[in-house]
Length: 283
Length: 283
Image (cartoon, rainbow over all chains, first blue to last red; front, side, top):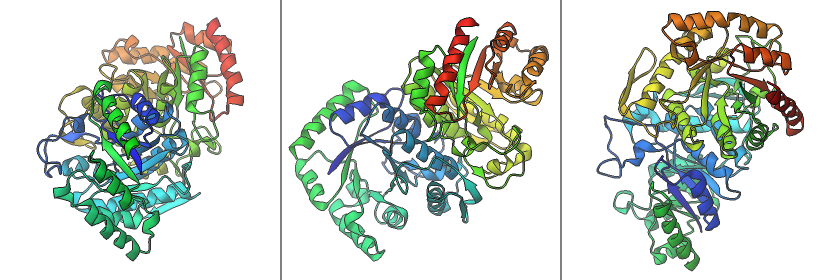
């Protein structure tokens, strides 16, 4: 079981370069950068976390820039969007961003994606809330075409382009893993349909259910779809520090635990990493 | 007079970090990354360079990712888009990219922009060819609002959003310079209206003298608009490497000249940079 850390990079957090180095030197496998392009003042759809939206949601930098910075000062650390809001991004531009960061990092990019919850935010990107899931599926399918085909074309309901050429292709073949974030069963179904991995949230059990209940159900879904659960990685975001639970996650076959870090400076973040490094060593 | 060098970063060119280090070591001021998101197979509008489109146009990495890598490998080198095709990019996402790279680089970003020529390419981003110039102006105005206002809003014909919040703001105040690329007189008018600089292309035979001859007219346009010509300096891109031409640029008050390296390997690029480094000491 690998360990990663997720953060909202802001102008008051530890810098991407410093966090990348700190994680790599402590044996962490991956760094995950959250994203929100902006936060509208109106709020038609509530935040799943409950209460007021935390300040860092307003302040987070673009994840492709921050992860490219982290990639520049590390050699092994994997770099993931956690998660990239594909419904707010042009698929041709995003395919290019993904391929470019995969090139710059030497094939270390993990394409975590999510379908978002903020209707006002996505509407400012021209996205219709009711059909966002189908939009994201088409965009992912279109990106896969761009990453893998010499002359890519895609003709869907929302995404439509005639043959075109775009390089570089990603370093990872056929493309960086598309790791679908979100709860059971809806996001899980999307992961089964077009994902190379699934990221459920472990942190909100009352809202999203119990990991030990939904993971077996998810594996049944994979089997029904003809996919092999043994080779389909599950990453858990937002974990407990209880070593017994962590050992049970490992025994359940969870491949990666991602620790949520505060958008804070070194003096706050580094002791948390040290504590986790010790905990990881003790498992 | 500053010296820059531009590149189409590809998976067969010199890598952004190595290129940036080579420039900084040789006394260059800036590295510039070109962009094309993709190239459609159909071509309704001809390439202004004439003839077939060079291979590098199909293969250019995302400039924000490439320039982040360049910034991370250097301390003082400025990094610029040369040019960013704003008509193909969502303004809220682009405002965030610009602010983020300005943060990661410590205020070293130069926002070179251009309105493009490839109708098929921009249509795949939902852009109508005929109204692209107005679209770009609105997007630039919207981005300026996002970069400078606590609660930004914009209501135009093409760009429209209610009050929203987005941080971080750029390090450079009020925002990184917007350097408008393109020919006299149309791009010049856009530079006068919303730019902090003008980048004419002077790579074709005879073009260099032609552009120098219109500089007084450009200064006149600025004054008529109530602007001090010093507020909108001129950078020459793709300049031939001739000492006499560079001295004429210096004498004409050109603030920056840059050499275009297309997608050169280190083997091909370094001798050219060495030659230009010699000019830096003589001009």
